[in-house]
Image (cartoon, rainbow, N blue to C red):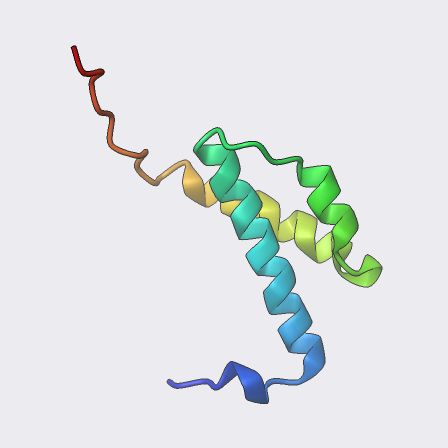
Length: 76
């Protein structure tokens, strides 16, 4: 199935963007990068903040099954 995201209704595009923001928060948390989920949540449209929290939980749970970045020993 091929979907042109540009042809989606604005409401669906907004949900995709909020989901993408939640995924980026979960990614940064996973790799110990600086991120504050509450700040990112406040940046989302108010009517989609519940959706953001739902997607953030889903992405956090999914990240448990993913591998970490490869570990490299320090050079001597």
